[in-house]
Length: 300
Image (tube, rainbow, N blue to C red):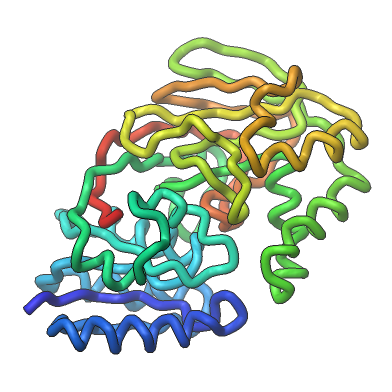
């Protein structure tokens, strides 16, 4: 009998997480799987309750929720010494960006994928904060996308509209457009230093962010590289006009967009910039990021 530990956010996607959890528990039980569930009670709850359970013999540790829930589970697991159990995801959030990397799409229930798909090694990005410290300490891991600049501010401003679902990001964008100014960045990519005045920089392990925005259409989660998407200074009107193209990935053809690939990255900024790894708001510039190639097994 398989033993699976599920860390669940039942309040995600306006409460749909609870329904998805019930469906998963029922389906897994019918297949003879022993699934134990930890239900998050508040922000940071999983960091308190999950680590002590990780020494037990699990066949998989699964996040049920959105990208933020996966971020919490990933950090609990990778900061647990000797952790080597496959991770899984049952998407139950608003955006579910990382679930777009599932090999067979979303054609089958995610709980069924846990039983039928084999774990594959995927890259993880590690961020080290140089001057700031969060409740994670001065470092953390992320598996999807980190933003800073305009995209980070949009993420922050969209929180007030989150109850509205996927449209919250668009509303956050409109709020941010009213006051945002380009930021001066100093980037060191694998030893090469560049200076840019940019609207934003997005550091990507996978392709999607904000649900269906294909921010890094050429990114691969197992190639040992991160993609850094930089939008150089642009007028508010130009930014608004270019925005729709991010849903198709055509934005990378815009003359103000640069795409870099590297293994190590340092970003410094003239003014402090908040960071949003996997949709969380955590830390600020300056920071160092490195790729940990094929660092975790993931059931895709």
